[in-house]
Length: 401
Image 1 (cartoon, helix red, strand yellow):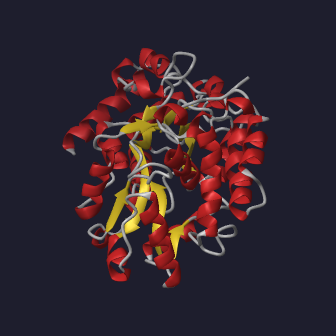
Image 2 (cartoon, rainbow, N blue to C red; image 1 turned 180 degrees about the vertical axis):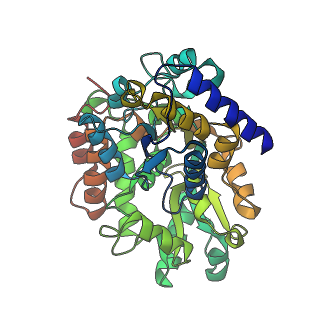
Image 3 (cartoon, one colour; image 1 turned 60 degrees about the vertical axis):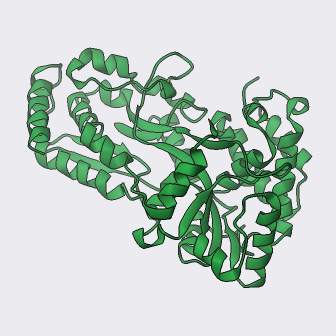
């Protein structure tokens, strides 16, 4: 801790003397992130901001919120309106980041002006223009969370293939337990992606078709799988009206036996449940066992905006970026503490499997929102066919012309 304080002091001196427009007391910075809600790093993030304020005399106005489509849209709308924050934690190296690139500063430019920062450039976040704009915080994976003690209590088989998944759904439904917690209104993402993984191998999952004719049959089947699960009683009756925060609470309260989600949900699981919760790979709809792939990657990082860079707030913003991306901060923000059965199962899920990036990350905003928020609920309800779903999505050129 003493070393960190000395480093911060040196940085303060360098920033005050180094570049034009030195940081002065009384500067107000605006930040946005998704370190909020049940994210275990939310408190760490606030602590870093508070420490920065205490050490500099500056003020940070933070507007962080749990990541969902509404949050993504609000961030992108603010950028489009010229109302972006000074520092942003957001998605990188995907369709979501493209609208930001002209309004954020590449890391090599920051490092050139402030060489002592040595901001790390991660190749996984290199954009199509060849530059890296974001400092990554944590990698992620996605899988099928299960309450193993509920499976034992009701004699349900763990979902290690499609037949056992359907049998578990039947048993839990008959015993008044929601088989799979999900919200179709705001976060159907994980169900949609895992349905693709249940039907498509690596090559087809990573296809980026330019027309409806190029959409693989496995993607069509994945949409039919969602309808099949709905008809099997896999989801709560209010799944179309509830929110992801509520469905997660349902899972954590053991009112639901399973949930598709990412590694970030692990930060919401109390330590005493980590010995009874496991995360499993996706069962294959056809064939035996589970998928040879798992979803994961490095998708988000801290950005410094041009709005801050071209203002008298530059030094203050760079200093805050340095605090947020210090070795200590990155470890604490990115460290999801797992233990017991959950930790062991997460390691087994990834071991020997190929990591693939989620399909939605490659889609443009309109196509992604149409697929997830319009088509998936309609397909699940039986109001839209798989073919109609992909016809609607592909009409929006999700992967470019």
